[in-house]
Image (cartoon, rainbow over all chains, first blue to last red; front, side, top):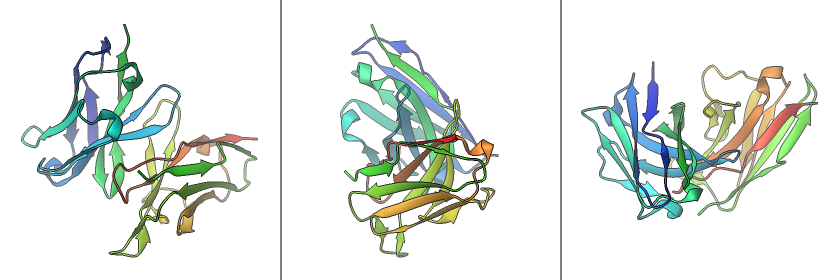
Length: 116
Length: 113
């Protein structure tokens, strides 16, 4: 059974940093693209970033470029999102998702709150 | 970036009736290798992550009831629920996966009339 479990969410002050993790199981992690998607409270879905199977290709939405960094550790079956210079508008539930063409499996999400 | 625009924003349909949700892309999303449009539909129920229903415009994910169907071409796409059931109450999103960032529509909230 495919499972994706996010962790690392927290309340952080504007300008602060946070690192999200996503532990994957039930599939061969090292062969799939992986994606982070976020959802602000009461709002729609926003694609944030994705990474190819060996970690050599990374893509970001413009609003997080230069502040967020996606990475993975295939030996640990884990996906990460390093978030720096956080802003209030980054407040959201962050989902990791497996990308088989499109997003076929999702984690339950983790809440990140940016507030003073 | 490709903008995905859904209509309506909300929809109320009686049980057993048809529900139709539209999605329009600002650009072509036709994947030339298979001549299919890179369009997916997701269902999100309160407190849950989104669930993939349909990809390549009309290919249903195994296990998704056949009352859900997708269609469309060019820049106009449709999700149809042929006979609404109570468990279909949710927000539905379209998404293009043709060009990064892989943008979503703003969502359509489907309720029971």
